[in-house]
Image (tube, helix red, strand yellow):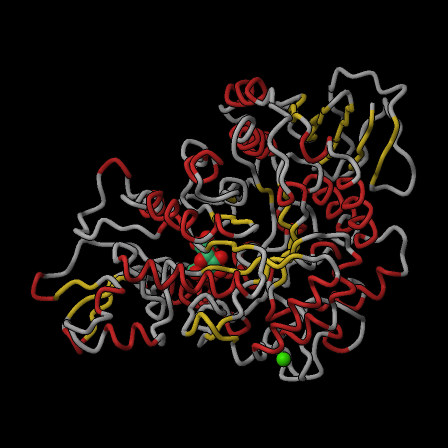
Length: 579
Ligand code: TEU
Ligand code: CA
């Protein structure tokens, strides 16, 4: 639900609107024209009845994925891992996690994707490895082991190193004392995810060699996990005052990040026709082009966190603001990011992924009467902006948060450790659990809902994470039969985007910027003009676009009956006009 809240960033919108006098001639690339569909392998389809999704399960669903009209599949990590963080703790970068299958299964999956004209982007998780990786086993065994400097160590006799904040540690402490060599090692994430030392050229070469291994197998790109964090000032000074306690910003501004990414591009990426996208944590509009300006020969795209962080209380464990979020702020954020890439670089756009709750719950309205309409409205936003859409599997069905009541139902280390941290520090665990119903990552990781049968057709065994009870109505089988379903709306919208390059490359202009209910914007290219109207509220609302729509043509609309051009928009109404 969103709440009116006039922010003081309207000036930014004006400059953003002015600045987005885009150079529609941005160089055309396949990855700019693609729709990316993200599959969380653990939750997509279980082929062998162990309750965990796997590669053969994905193989069995490739025709479904193809039927969506998408072009690229982003697969979350499938490498050898003890799954402390569901595969984001890699113990063998050149093998397939045993729960997910074998390298032969992978080869068949890749072949099946390519045979259908689908590209595969894998997850590159190289800020850290698992503590069960051979490198770390060697590194921690002695101070003079050849692998010692593959990680960041601090000899205990020098005293405790300056504080570093950890995302997942139950004490928020990113330094762990390792008895064997009486030294601390650094882990921005869990204790089982030690940070790799990118200042070591041997480690960099190991990573580049591993990347070549996968590119030589034929994959089409990498999504790069927390890649802005890879370079560290290894003197580990106290957090510089100018960061005002913002560790994430400090982590993202390491001394050699861009040097290493330029080396990665020169030595690996530039040798293949592949795409690269940074998980741009800690990256702001001020430094985004440093990563994706094509003239810098680093990466192609980055995704930001400004949008998905909106409406959360600051310095909290993702506690939603009781006032909800301001649509005016939402519009400003996505408008300013469009302006960043008006002339150089290229943007991405997403609302859902494996780290996010379901977009319909977080940004729309998952009440039964509004679920479908608001889901289609949000999908319209994602597929009509000037950026490559990263669309999360299940959102095409209008899947929603499962909203667990008990901590015992959670599996995500983030929720489990934050709960312990709250409990140990005397925090309000009930308030935390209430907030997790809206923002916890596990809400986006519940099994994909294929059918209205047991476990939604995801598995024949007990699923690793509970299935949302609404699977009986929210599922592929039911939605295939309904021409007005979220699923079929998604297909129409993908087709609309891909058959109208104005929706890909066209200049974006925000209209009626202070409207607290409606997001209105135009896209223009070579004389083609599109108007998108999105009512983000559960009530009628109008937009002052200043445009004469009497001759406008409705290209797509999320209600069964056509809109009245001069009447107010109906609740959660989305309309795409050509005018
Ligand atoms: O995410 C980075 C990250 O910080 C997220 O965990 C997210 O910002 C966090 O949930 C905010 O509370 C990447 C991966 O996408 C995530 O799944 C991993 O857990 C993390 O890195 C460590 O690899
Ligand atoms: Ca399985």
